Amino acid sequence: MIRFLPLFFSAFLWPSISSAQTDSTSVLHAQCRDADTDASLPYVTVVIRRASEFPRVYITDLHGRIEIEGLAPGIVQVQARRQGYAPSDTTLVLSLGLISTLQLSLLPVPILLREETAVQEHSATDLVRHLIANTRFEYLHTGYANMATYAFDAYSSQKVINRRTEEIVAGIEYTIKGYHQSPDSIAQHITGIRNWGKWRLSVSPGLTQNPARGIVDDKAFEIAPHPLSPDALEYYHYERISTVHVGDLHVSRIGVSPRHGNEPGLLGDIWIARDDFSLVGYDLRLNFPALLQLRGIDHWQVYQQNTRYLNEYWLPERQICTVKTRDYTAQATTRCYRYDLNMDLPPAIFEAPEIVILPEATTRDSTFWAAHTADRDTAHIRIQSELLQGDLPAAWKKHGLGRNR
Image (cartoon, rainbow, N blue to C red; front, side):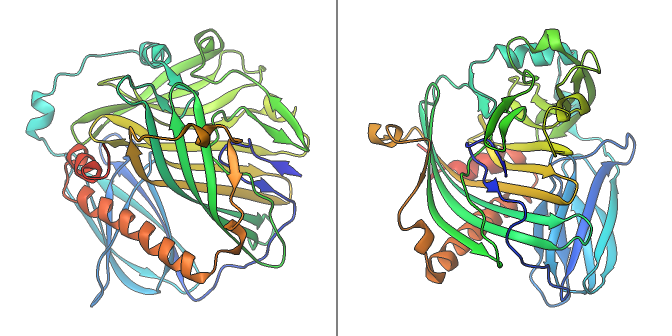
């Protein structure tokens, strides 16, 4: 059995539940890049239009990617737009049951914001050093002196895929109400669980804090220091790959690798906001020497993307954990779609274990899931429509007003 760290991810049983992807819809994978530098562009608004239908809006991740399932086949117009770039438009024919891949290149255009914004130059090591110096709860977010508590709603889904046939052979989804209290207390209550398929998955969900720590075959491991741990500067090499504009912010993408290639550790990227040295996100995987210590594991990776709320707080918005063995790929995706800041939280919330599955969670009926899905989609569409206006920080601020204290 392979299980994730018992903080925000489920346990996968190999093999598990069955549900093959339907062949009556289409899938679109798109990648957005800067036409001049070929750098990937995060937070690009991608609008898909079809005749006589309401437009569908998506936002690219930190790698400039979107993956959209469940699209009806046929002709669609795809537009990518981002502040500081000319829109990119294309027409695409989606085929029944197939995956369409699209590369979108956006041309930079001069804007007043770039001319007036003076950005202090920092090396990759300086950026990491500033981030490490910030007090924080593990690697979920940097510490904020004026934020003592928060609560969040989250939705998580898992799937296990047969690597030979690409069939989805397992699946589970669940809802979470999470709570955080400074300096280092976190609690998560599962409020709904739905398994599908002919097998069952056991579950202990939550946001993972350290990609180099977890559980395999009931044995806990911690292979290497995290690239943002206090002693990381002596263990890892950092290189600035690019700096991109996200609204009126500047975010640097930092490549990370162990100083000595034969040492177990993490490889990948870390994104850091250059205005306040906050953690915007990371995409880290165990290197080969680390994987040698995990029996039967070929790949172990955690991607986390944060979102800036109230124009000030970078908090987790999405986390994806991927584990591969010779025969299967397991992937858990958790989305935090609402935050309430500085709430009055009863002490009893943190006196229980970090993960609590409520008694009624496994008996939630279709009414609960219909209401939950509608609420989640409404929140997601609302923030995307605000991001569509172009000023990302202003959109985040509007999104938080009336919902956060």
